[in-house]
Length: 298
Image (cartoon, rainbow, N blue to C red; front, side, top):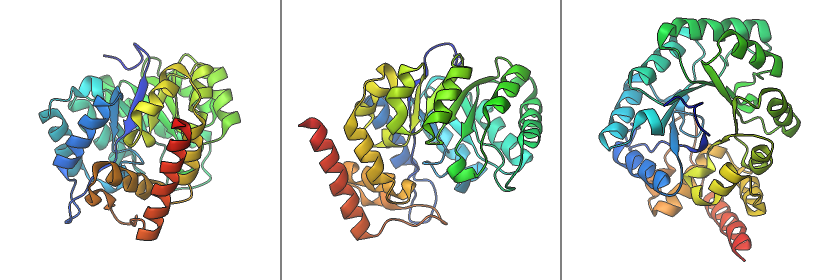
């Protein structure tokens, strides 16, 4: 199914469990994917930012995809794949693997090593990427996350790419946290699948025509995020929870919350260069999140 054929909904930016040896922990990943899907997510997005995609090699990615498929997930409907590479060759290798395994869509960051690049260079890179996929090119979601890449996808650049590759560029995930930018993105490109990465802005974005989210917090509270992503229903407790997470390195913080829910401290493991939260930070974060969720429930 083409991802643009229906409302995108809520996708969990799937965290990656690791073994003590630093390899993807396939049983834990599969169990976690099944859990978030059962709790309301329409899909999972593997190898993104929360999933530590830049730290996961091609052979490891293939094993994860195989494990998800072997566990009964319908990759064409339920698995989006992150493409995060500085080189065109690397991005094409990641994308081809996802397409050959019939993944639902590609979530593609801009090349991120060189800073201060402009729209012309980014247009050339994305054009070469899509053209390099040839007839297989489909379901590309542009990923705007300048806090990590230090590269902003401008509104005009998105317009040029969608015009050059109609039906291939189907959406944008905006994790900028910049509400005026998100508003303009929705105003100019609402017929694309605009996915709001900052959960604090998710309900407002959906009210303005956004199609949902690829969400890191969906690893922890998918059932609470679903009304925001599908109906635009506000939840102040989510904002409080996001603010608590943002006081720490985000991916290790999300994993600390997964570990608490799963009662499995193995989820605290991250791939270098990330470092797991220390015990004091884990205790503080979990207490803050419990308080935020209890306040909403009250």
